Image 1 (cartoon, rainbow, N blue to C red):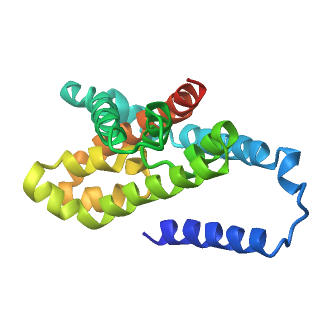
Image 2: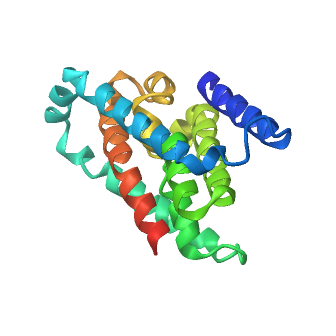
Amino acid sequence: MKGSLIILSFFATGILLGIFRIFPHDFLHYNVSFYVLCGLMFSVGISIGNDPTSFRQFRNLNPRFVFLPLMTIAGTLLGVMTVSFFLKNRSLTECLSIGSGFGYYSLSSILTTQCKGVELGTISLLSNIMREVLTLVLAPWMVRYFGKLAPISAGGATTMDTTFPIIVRTSGKDFAIVSIYHGFILDFTVPFLVTFFCSL
């Protein structure tokens, strides 16, 4: 939760700096967001490669949980397709590109902004932050009514970092490996799916 509030504060600060023209008008035309994206991808690669226990845990994963990330992807995209019918001013592909962030708001919002512009990038940011925050707040309720895998699926790409503690607390330590595996796979798919749907 604290991390989400920090991200939102940076977002709000950026809006204020833009409103009061603190930076030159041409500041964003120098591909600043592209270099930020490259730095973000570099840091994600380091964090994954720097934890050798993750790969060992993946090898010991129960086979019946292997398809959980695929079910999360399918369920999310199906839900997005359903909601898109009620959003007359947004195309199906725009909605799918936002949903494909799976809670990974920092990366998905930058990719969406690069491909579709600032407005859709902002929607992507807020939508994916809401997914993370709702998982943090509603995880105990999800476990109670939908089972121990529910907060993992709801957390999307965040289940190996920000929502991991609440998942372990509510679903139990037995689901820690599942949570890490789930988040790892969805982290990996976000740049491909967001870029794919943005290009359609």
